[in-house]
Image (cartoon, rainbow, N blue to C red):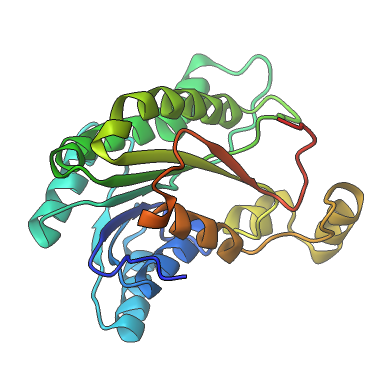
Length: 253
């Protein structure tokens, strides 16, 4: 299927880790999009940019920024506009799990909400006006589970993203802009490999016990769907939450 992404300009946040953001950046670049890579880790961004340029011939823009900082959304938007003159696609992938005890201090909750919700909202609203002016845009949020197995501040923040995105979809649809959320299951990202399921034996046992497909997904499984949602082919899909999880989630709605 031709996705017509050649020449589109895409921002991908959380792109430095060896996981979902990186795979999304690669897939969008493979479809011909110009890429802006955003993360705190300059060295890893530079390595990814070199690899993408070596394969596609197009040099991505690098923005090594902490998106929680108050001026970060403006700086990202302005840098991309100076380089490319437009922003067509925003993939909000930056975030992180934050399991907390019941008596966790407010500061711990505030930090997670700032990273997993507020940074997403603020960057999106920073780039929206030029999308609205040009009557086209795609916003995709990488979120998380709606079935929390424990108290985790990130789960609450991601649920807030789902509600905010649904409300926003009602406001921007007539401007040719869609916004959707994609919730990963057990995807072999840096976070899964290093902290949550660090051994192959653990991964296999969890998959056997909980995942109907029988295995953990790869970051590319997320990237394929995100790339489709970023295209003109997905023009009639907005305000939705998609689960890429091999059947892990148990709810039926």
